[in-house]
Image (tube, helix red, strand yellow):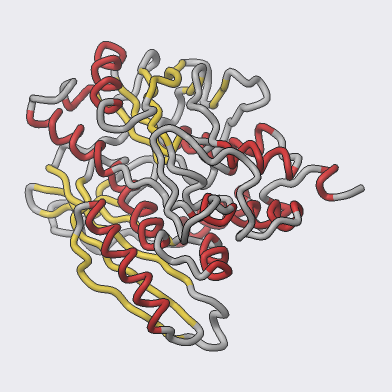
Amino acid sequence: MSDKAEGLDYASSGVDIDLEGASVASLVGALSRSVRVTGMPGAPVDLPGGFGGLIEFGDNLLALATDGVGSKLQIASMMNHWSGVGIDCMAMNVNDLLCVGAEPIAFVDYIAVPKPDPEQHAAIGASLAEACRIARVTLAGGETASLPGIVTELDLSGTALGWLPKGAAITGANIDAGDVMIGLPASGVHSNGFSLVRKVVELSGLSYTDTAPFDTEHPGRNIIRMGDGSITLGEVLLNPTRIYVDPVTDLIEACRAGDGPCPADALHGICHVTGGGLSNLLRLHGSLGWHIENPLPVLPEFTWIQETGSISDREMARTFNLGMGMVLVVDYAHANAVCDWVASRLEGTQMVGEVRDHGHKVTHNNPDIVFEHY
């Protein structure tokens, strides 16, 4: 029986999310506590969920996040199309900072290559500069390492710094049953699941330079082009991860200032939908559950990926964002006002579900999609 008939999954493509989770837990368990104690600059602040780390800094808190672009870079290398990868790298970091209520302010990058390539580096530098503009941050430095024998192709990662007033962190602690989930649309596959994506493309027999075998139009997004003519499969897959600083930072700041669509304490949680898909919601609260009744429209590339790879609904929702890159969790009384405010700035935003006291799990209007652990 062929792979297609059996159906692909992320583990068979080389990435086991459960094993990764267990490995990270082992790493964290082996780490010692900070030598800096409460009241000292740099002292750790406990934060459930782990979207970003918080440390004390006087009357404020600093937030840090680090991540990379991952195997999406292999497609960029095949197509020599680097204009979006800096945006991907920035987005994977600053979007995590937003989840704790921090405003991103600075970024540093790390590029590892087998051999320097000035033209390639110039393209990535231009992409990082555009990412800084979108995220409203300073590129405060970086490092390029030539590592022949250790790396075989370019790798790109980075670290983002943010800040927020002490006592203003969005931790998920105030989430309650009845809170409303507001979904913010994704710009594409973003930067997760590409080991599976590449396996599906291989199975399809198509080239990344072939015309995309599906309708690429979707409200509210533009595909970054390499040239004229039909949009290619590679261009769709490489479309960069959406940076949610606008509108999420503006929403948080307006609410804290008293001129937003709700009080600041009505913003109960923010979830960046990355690796693990919808199971990321479980990181926001230790006991409550999540029900998605009105999901955002699935982007056309995900439908093609699923059909070509014979991938189950649950595996798709476990691996990809499926068109929803971020979720705001808002007090029921203010949900309409917040949704309207965000939707006026980001087309396609809508209320997608609610928090339920039905156990620590994610449920969906598709009964095959259920997650009970991250």
